[in-house]
Length: 139
Ligand code: RTP
Ligand code: MG
Image 1 (spheres, rainbow, N blue to C red):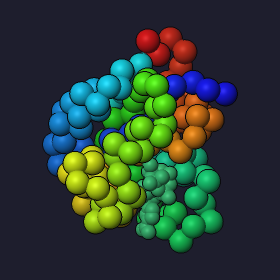
Image 2 (spheres, rainbow, N blue to C red):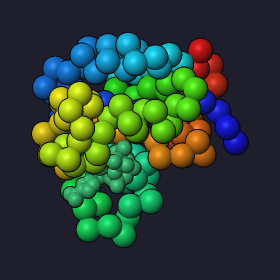
Image 3 (spheres, helix red, strand yellow):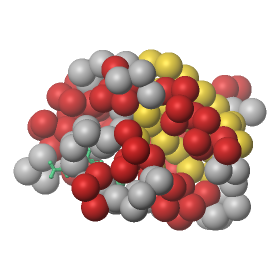
Image 4 (cartoon, rainbow, N blue to C red):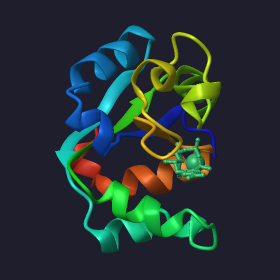
């Protein structure tokens, strides 16, 4: 299903480093409209559920403890071609390989503490957005 929406989180590293405002500014100035927004935290159980697709990967346990280590910002974003354009805006998973000017190049610390999440498909954007937001929290 085509939705023109994606889902993002500002991860605990970027929240702790004080980058919420700068990252939201970059996102909105890049043409994304905020449909839903929440400052919250993931328990280890919730982080484990969210990243269930990676449960067989060697970095899964570290990822779950990192993602539950402090508050995060969750958001649903809208723009034409949202999923692909947002992944371009955030840059490569490993910030040392991310293009200049991308959010990860500017704000990430490591391959794990990489500042932001971006959905990888329209289907996952819908699933991930609904993980955090009910229908009456989307505008
Ligand atoms: P994301 O899902 O957070 O937007 O990141 P991504 O698509 O670029 O990367 P993905 O392969 O889905 O990995 C999810 C997150 O797991 C952490 N990771 N750590 N230590 C490692 O080698 C490693 N590899 C991935 C990162 O936080 C990555 O964003
Ligand atoms: Mg991913």
